[in-house]
Length: 435
Image 1 (tube, rainbow, N blue to C red):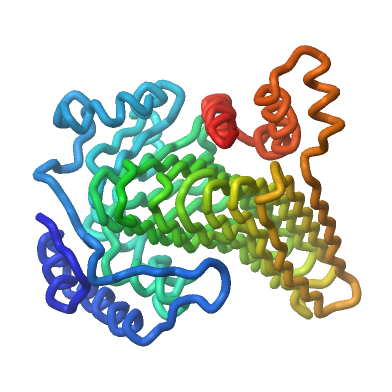
Image 2 (cartoon, one colour):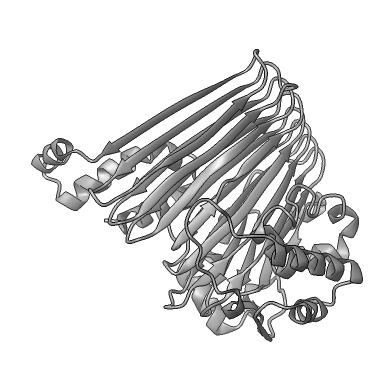
């Protein structure tokens, strides 16, 4: 089944195909009306999108399975080449989305006995509505911007995770997303609930086959971190150079809770992504370490948002931007400390490395503090790779490419240190590709 172009009729077809109830269809149709009224963003990269040419839904006859051996051979080959399933031995659970649908989901029996839920968002809407309903669409409103409205109208795939109280996962859960068709739009919806006194590490990988026509990826992620709980969300997106990556990610953090975003942006043609923490409980903390790499006309507009609403809250934003060969890597952030958030503190540190004279980078920070007992610290550096450093390293026997890579790896070390080993190895390979 394929659905191209956006209309009330086509949205109804998607909902009907998924056998959704009337409440979900109504939610989709309201979002579609909001989408028609909302303008494109008035900041960041120019978005030249033909919404009538997007393939909004594509699904094969695959149903979600928990045995990789039952997946069709041609699809298995795609993910086997990427090494996705091989990594399952290091995880507590794995989900795989191909085109518009989740085709594989599995987790250890040990987690099932602890009543951890890790499934697709469609399965959660049908079988875990009592858990989903209080949270779905609450911190990311469909009316927020054109792409949250679009996702809310046509969402398909994505993960639902529920970690019960007093439950700590010692290994990550992971989802992997693949776009394999020309003009396809992927609109997964992820909802994560980490209940009180619990912990979760969730990892996400993304790739796409390269086409001459544009692909669109417009996801929404909502995370709820309970009291004294922690959640880490690690992403390395390596979309091909024809993908518009326009994603909204937000977490609501309760008292004593901790949310960490580890966000790598290597691929895509134009990218807009600013993971956000809303620190609503006393003593809550948020952290975002992000990297944006742009070359060959790519435009990476990345950063983070930290909203302090309670006292004694802390946040940290660390950004690394790399630009070369007519690429543009911009940093955009917002830190807001409210009147009620007394004795709070925030650190923003953005560093930029220009590899040649054609790389471009800008910084757009917004820092607002509304009480006198809190503070925001902001640091920024911009540097071009110096001929002296290259000369020194090459005199020690390194080639030009090896010397440049060593400088890049040193510049990104604070980001790489936060990654699991397999993701750090992947990042090294991706950084080599920019030379």
